[in-house]
Image (tube, rainbow, N blue to C red):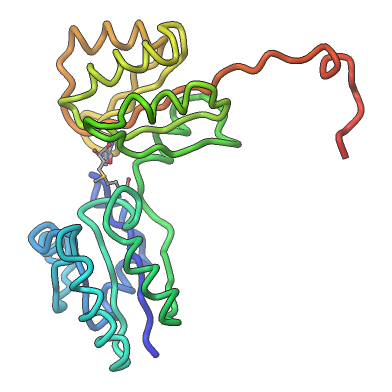
Length: 238
Ligand code: SAM
């Protein structure tokens, strides 16, 4: 039986496509794309011509059927999203789950995604972190945020430019104005920028400078107060 490849695509700078991604896109029989126009542009840039079908959040249940027929006929399929890694705040999860259930082999290529450069750029610990993706736009937003209040790992959020200021105001409410934050925008693009400081300072910055472009917000985890026994204990746990 054929395979499903998940192929990450650039989040801005077209040079970030990997050689393997190009080879896989050249070799597969069908490409499922979140937006066929965006992917056509990329394929044209790479000089690749392949059958393209749309696969987005409104038709992903229906395309799973076309996908199964294609792999059962022995044809390899690639899934791409508009930018970054499919399945990361983008369609992908449902198709991978279908593959797992139906015994179809899945191969996810490593490659571009916005969360990793934003995390590493932040200067916060990246040995342990959690990815929160997009918070709900309305219902349940504050509840979800409050669940992060005690989180000790570095937290990564995606947010639209129209909600960055509101999001920072809510962060100030939940994490406190003094919590360190790093906000990266337009990663890999011409106007890439990272603004670091306390939540209060970064909020003041974006109240003054209208947020434009694509944003990743990285919040330092809560500092854990060491118990007296931990301070005096010098032996390893295990
Ligand atoms: N699949 C993508 C990934 O692997 O990162 C994420 C897709 S999600 C629909 C789009 C969000 O990712 C944007 O709203 C922004 O939060 C983040 N993003 C994507 N490209 C970015 C970039 N160049 N700079 C900063 N954030 C970016």
